[in-house]
Amino acid sequence: MIKKVLIANRGEIALRVHRACKEMGIATVAIHSEADRDAMAVRLADESVCIGPAPSAQSYLKKSQIIAAAEITGADAIHPGYGFLSENAKFAEMVEAHGLIFIGPTAEHIRTMGDKIAAKQAMIANGVPVVPGSDGGITSIDQAKKVARDIGYPVLIKAAAGGGGRGMKVAEDEDALETAIKTAKTESKAAFGDDAVYLEKYLGKPRHIEVQIIADTHGNVCHLWERDCSLQRRHQKVLEEAPSPALTDEQRNEIGDIVAKAVQKMGYRGAGTMEFLCENGQFYFIEMNTRLQVEHPVTEMITGIDLVREQIRVADGKKLSFSQDEVLLVGHAIECRINAEHAETFVPSPGTITDFHAPGGPDVRLDSAVYSGYRIPPHYDSLIAKLIVHGRSRKECVMRLRRALDEMVVGGVDTTLDLHRKLVEAEDVVDGNYDIHWLERYLGLK
Ligand code: ADP
Image 1 (cartoon, rainbow, N blue to C red):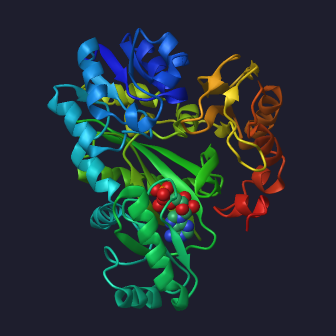
Image 2: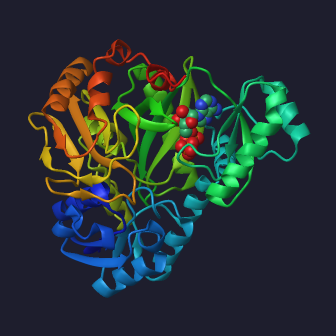
C-alpha cells in the first residue's frame, strides 16, 4: 500500500500532487533545489529534502539524488509530475530497481512512446490513424524526396526524440527539403543528443485534439474524452478546452473508442494522452505522452474525476474507480496558462510577486504555487498559474472566464494575463473557430 509519496517536481504540479495525496491520507515528501526553499509545496508537504543547487541538471534531473531522498524519508512511491524526469524510462527503471513504485507507466512504454518513430509504428499496428509520411526514419535525401513527392508538399521534418516543439522544420518544396532535413538533424542532435528525423505531411489548418486515457493493471482502460489545445504559440499550448468545440458527439465517441482499444492492446498502465491533429473530420496521431499533462484539469472539470488520485490508485495495483459508462461529460471547461512573461514580447519576467489575488466563486479553479511575496526563480519555466473555469455551456464558461480573469491580480512581475483577457474577447475564440495557426496569425507572427 502506498503510504508516502515523494513528489519529484516543483511549482504548481508539485502542489497538485500533494493535494491529491492529502485527500487520500497519504504522506508527502517534497524535494527542492536551493532556489526553491520557499516553495509552497515545500511548506505544505509533510517532509522536504533539498537535493541540490538551482540548475535543474543538478537537482530536479538528478536521478540518484531523488531516489536517495525517497530512501532516506521512507517513501514508497515517486510521482514525477510532468516535464523533468516524467518521461525518462531510465528513471522509471531505477525507481523500480530500488523497490519503489513509479507512479506512471512501465519503462518499456515510456521508451517506445519517447521515440516518435517507434510510437507511430506502434499506433499503426494498433489501428490508430497517423499523419501520412515516411515509414520510419529518413535514411537518405533521395528516399525523403520520394516520400515527399508521394504525399505532396509542404512537408514537416520532425525529430524522433522531439519534444516541446523543437527540432521541427517545414519544407515548402523540394528545393527546401535538404536544408530542412539538415537543420532538423542539427537541432535535434543539440537538444536531444539524437539526430534521427522523420517526415510528415504538413497539415495546413488542423486542430490539436488529444484524448486522455487511464488504465489499471487489471485490463481496464477508460478514455476521459478529448481536449482541444489548438491555441498555440511556437507549438506551445496557451489555452486549452474540453470538450472540443469542433467535434460532434459521434466523432468524440469514435476517437475515444479507437484510443481506448489501442491502449488496451498495448497493455498500458497509468494515465496517458494520445495527441492528434484533426482536419476535415479526419484524425491523425502525432504522439503519445506517457504522463500527466499540464492541461489535465479541464478534463477533471468536465468529468469530476481526480486524475492524480486515479494515477496513484492504479500504481498501487487497485482497479480504476469507474467504468467507461460512468465517465461523465458535464458542461465545458477552459484553462488559461498564465506565465510570468511580458504579454506581448513573451520575455520571461522572474522576480518578486508583490501583490497576488486569486479569483474565486463558482466553478473557478486556480492551480498555482505562488503567493504574495514569492520570488519567481529565473532557472525554470515561466508557468506561474493555471486558471481553469467550468460552465454548464461553453458560453457560460467563456463569460465566467472573462470575469475570473478580471478578478485576478499578479503584481510585481509581467504576466500573460492581459493576453488571455484579449483572447477571451476575440470573436474566433468566443465562437471556438480556430486552428493551430490561429494564435500566431492573431499575434502577427504569421
Ligand atoms: P512536440 O512533442 O515537440 O510537442 P508534437 O508532435 O506533439 O511535437 O507537435 C507539436 C505541435 O506541432 C502540434 O500540436 C502542431 O501544432 C504542430 N505539428 C505537429 N505535427 C504537425 C503536422 N504534421 N502538420 C502541421 N503541424 C504539426
